Each structure stands twice: as structure tokens, then as C-alpha cells.
Length: 299
Image 1 (cartoon, rainbow, N blue to C red):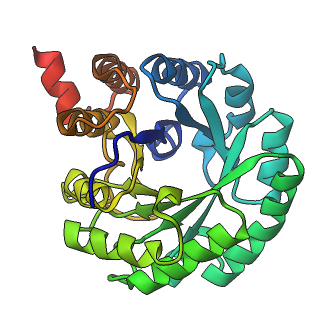
Image 2: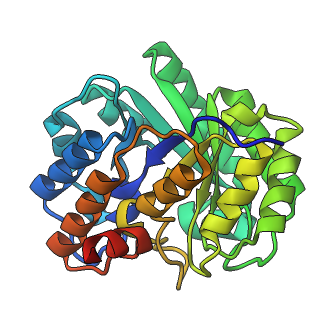
């Protein structure tokens, strides 16, 4: 298949990038990050997670973040809402779009949200119903699509099963996450092919972590298959708190550099994005994992 002409980046930095920090990042820094990302051309920013502060204290200021955003025209500011309580709180903050997350691994689902895959899908039904009533779109995430820290290999058919359940439930788009970053290009292709038998390719997104340095190669592989939505995190921040050793999501700057080299339009200013990556990593005292950002800063 041919590469898509345009690709939409979904910036998950404020969630994947900050929830794994040992200490909470102050609200002003999160808001500044969101502002800078929008100024760099990101049109979709997952800005907050309406999860329990007991389990993820780094996201306890979700209301302050969603209500403090200086909204830009043409930019979607979404929030993660794993249950009905989270959705109701997000709706009170005027959220435009929300996301729910499941897993293709039974063991990961039990460790992460303390229920089976089937039970997690059942919990999403009222969330989707309430979101429809509020005229709010819902995006779905599937974790561990290319490997699980507890089960190891995950069958593409299982990924397709969970993804189809989310799509049939009403998720307008399903993001496929290599949560622990163990995937390789051929596995990524086979996984996408399996899922695309049930869901149109233009309703799928790739969410690849870079633990083994394979994220860009895996993205190239699924771009060839026709995927045109990519999740990424500025400066490669983040990781999965439930998967030991998993590094951050693929760096937004590196993805944009790849897309620019392929002649694929993203609408993002690479230099502005790289400057944002440099700023946020300095602000929180973390290394910048974006090779493109580090190289540009050295010029």
C-alpha cells in the first residue's frame, strides 16, 4: 500500500509523559506544555486523565488543567475517562472528547485495572452511552497489542477481538498500543492486518513505545499499510507504571522528522516542537529522549 498523504498526530504527552513521574508536576507547567504544543501545530492533545488520585496522584489536578486551558481554534483537547465517574467529572469541565482504554492481555488487564478484558469492556458500555447523550466523541485504546510484560506474545486475533468490541461499542477510532515497546515491524504489520479485517484502516491509530528502539521502524511499517493517525509524546516522555522497564512513547519530534522526510504532511512545526521538548525536559529535570530534538538543539 502507499503511504498516506497526511498524518494526524495525537499528543499524549500530558498523560503518558507525566503520570509516570515520581512527583506530581505542577498545574502551571502542564498548562504551559499544552499551550506550547498547540502553538507548534498539534491539533489533538490528550490534556488530562480523570483517574483516581489514589492510584495516579500525578493526575489529581485534572479539573484545574481542563478548565485552565487557553483553547485554540481547531485543536481538540481530550481526556482519559476510564469509568462513568471520570466521564461525569470531565463533562463538568467541558471536555470535547474522551478516551477509554482496554487491553489485549488478560493478565495486564487484571494487574492494571483489576478485572478481566470482558469485564473492562462491560464497564465501558455506560461510559459510551453517557458520552453519546452528551454528544461527546469517544476514542478507544487497546494496550499490549505487540506483547505483554506478564503473558509475553499476544495473538493478533486477540487484539482484533478487543479492538472490534470497542469499535462496535461506539469508539470512533481505536488506538493500538505497544505498551512495553517490544514490537518489531513484521509483527506490527501482521497485527494491523488482523485488526483491519474488522475495522476500516482510517479508524485505526498506532501508539508505539520505544523501549527497544523499534518505534519508528514499526511506525514506518504501519504507515505502509495505510495507518494515518499516530500517538506520540513530546521528548519521548512517559512509560507505563504497570510495565517495569517500559520507556516512553515514541517522541513526537522524531515522528515529525520521519514524516517530513517521507513528504507526509502533519501540519506541525518541527523546530517549535523540538523547542517545546527541550523546555519541558529541563522544567521537570528529565532527559530528552528525542534524537531529533537533541540534534536540532546542538546546531
